[in-house]
Amino acid sequence: MTVCNARPGPAFPVPGTVILMSRATLDKDPREVASMFDGVARRYDVTNTVLSMGQDRYWRRATRKALGIGAGEKVLDLAAGTAVSTVELGTSGAWCVAADFSVGMLTAGQARKVPKVAADGTRLPFGDNVFDAVTISFGLRNIANRGEALREMARVTRPGGRLVVCEFSTPTNRLFATVYKEYLMQALPRVARAVSSNPDAYVYLAESIRAWPDQAELAHQIAGAGWSAVRWRNLTGGIVALHAAYKPQR
Ligand SMILES: C[S@@+](CC[C@H](N)C(=O)[O-])C[C@H]1O[C@@H](n2cnc3c(N)ncnc32)[C@H](O)[C@@H]1O
Image (cartoon, rainbow, N blue to C red):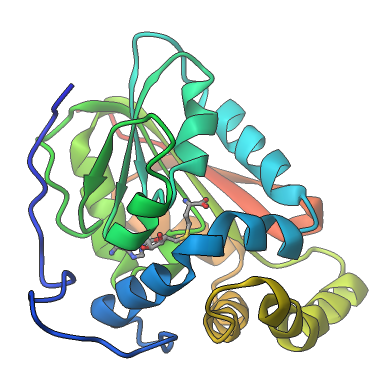
């Protein structure tokens, strides 16, 4: 099924240009971010599973359940990368489309038989109110203008439709939070060096997680983008949080 034509925005490199960035900075320049993910795409799935010690599967399952989707519904999985998250959503019976602006990531997931669209999350190539639910896993943190992305997600969701944001967050136990920060800055880049196709990108990952707002602040930002009844649930002691919300009925 074809739902749209991709509408490449400024994040897509102009043909003929070569971007040599191996990692993005916290400015999150869209070209640098897309290029960095192109660079990790080949071994993205395995690196994720190793770095999260297998927890990624549990986080994806919890995201699907929190979204409460089922057969007959249309779901957008934004910043879907290799579409591993989209496949998990699809086990609900809902029709799920993967959207991402890294063509490298989408291509690395080409064996996954779900519809894929190359699209910038801040300029989605979909009409208003077309999805029953929208979700983004480990993607919002990488989008430079997260307010714009949250508003775009609201635009394409029908009134009363659901949002779930799955993202790294702040561990609730202080002692554990200290150990975890150490893991992020010391061990994570080292482990990534052994498994990833672009280990430098995992320095960015550690930095971006540390700079990310905590659960309450992110809930506030989601509400500020027009979503209602925002609440969250911690997974794995707050390493990850699921924020859920509705698009207001009006
Ligand atoms: C860490 S990966 C997450 C992939 C997948 N959702 C998962 O759970 O494995 C983050 C993804 O966000 C995408 N991304 C970042 N900024 C984006 C934007 N502005 N529009 C679309 N995708 C974006 C990247 O290309 C990358 O594939």
